[in-house]
Amino acid sequence: AQSVAQPEDQVNVAEGNPLTVKCTYSVSGNPYLFWYVQYPNRGLQFLLKYITGDNLVKGSYGFEAEFNKSQTSFHLKKPSALVSDSALYFCAVKRATDSWGKLQFGAGTQVVVTP
Amino acid sequence: GAVVSQHPSRVICKSGTSVKIECRSLDFQATTMFWYRQFPKQSLMLMATSNEGSKATYEQGVEKDKFLINHASLTLSTLTVTSAHPEDSSFYICSASPELEQFFGPGTRLTVL
Image: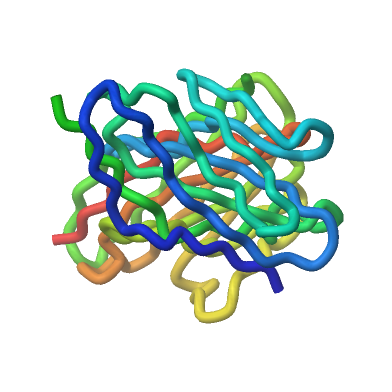
């Protein structure tokens, strides 16, 4: 069975500083990896995904993530954080051959960007 | 990207009543939709897989008689919380996948008094 770990419950960063949200995963076979963002009382918004190809994936709102197979990580990064980036971030993984019902979410990381 | 809508966005009901939540795929057809439940500051928990034209598949521990799912068309799935109680209060989110992405609805906040 697959699993996802987001080791930090909360990440605090000052506006303009780099933002990193960590994610490690465990899955047998090829993984599909995703990052989603959730604002209060809203659904999940897709940020980016890794399916295949380049390990560095660029997504919405200036976010990017790097797939590292040897470290089984898929950390989310943004070079310069904005106050509006404050939200709850979820990493998710499924095995490439599995259905969407097997999509496994991490516990989420609350990002707080201070002015 | 594809759009998934949910209605209502927020509902408050009395204990013992039933509440229906709709999930629609607006610009694609979805033979499968998913229903999640999310508690405050927690991750999403898959409740069930909604299959068009057939019975839903429920995750372990989810009461199928409590959470009725109907997927009557390729663009609509409904979740009915029957005889709701305060412990059913939660944020319910649906999703669907046209291709290699999973699109989520905006969620429905259910509060049972």
